[in-house]
Figure 1 (cartoon, rainbow, N blue to C red):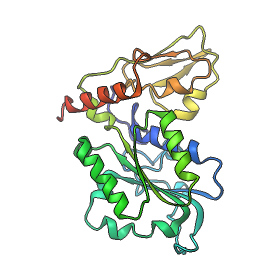
Figure 2 (cartoon, helix red, strand yellow; figure 1 turned 90 degrees about the vertical axis):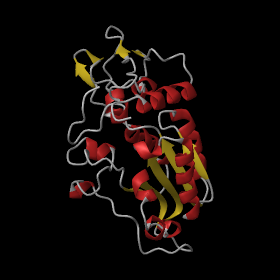
Figure 3 (cartoon, rainbow, N blue to C red; figure 1 turned 30 degrees about the vertical axis):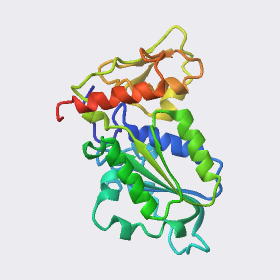
Length: 265
């Protein structure tokens, strides 16, 4: 896997998968506002990264910044639907509970989306601790989600967004860079004879491992992290993964095992 590039979310980045899931689940919500900080300071300076993920809020170009809704009260929230993204380190920091106490006033339906991807939050008990912090902030329920399990993410998020109140969603998957040098996952492959070049895989994911070489796409095996996210968005199902027969839970265990044996472990 290649090292990160400024302005581009890494191949295999769980933040990308989480943001795609949030956008997909909330696309029909009235008055939707997605705000906060996806936590990765490497992105946000250049499109399409800025349009794909709000990460690195301090570095985000002004035209891409979305302010946290204010001026509302729990009885009369500022907007209909608010998705407030926070990285694990921000939620764990001292004073986080005090800074985020206004979630109920942000939206009639508010989802606190927590991105648990750093080394300090690989263990299950630490992930559950983040869920406890979300409950302390007024969330009526908290779901721990694998951002690469797109079907379950869509199901849970749609259920949360359909109910007024504050809800919590902890997207737990290790940072792609923690997996570098660990148990590297085999890259996916594109059947270039069957690919119709519809661009859907890249338009949705923006993954830097994908490139269009007319008449079809190809995957750079040196860049691919083996997250399999693009496979789920290929209409013609011509992106093949060596893990296609594995269920979501097994794929998740493989990613965590890679992070625990990476160069910084």
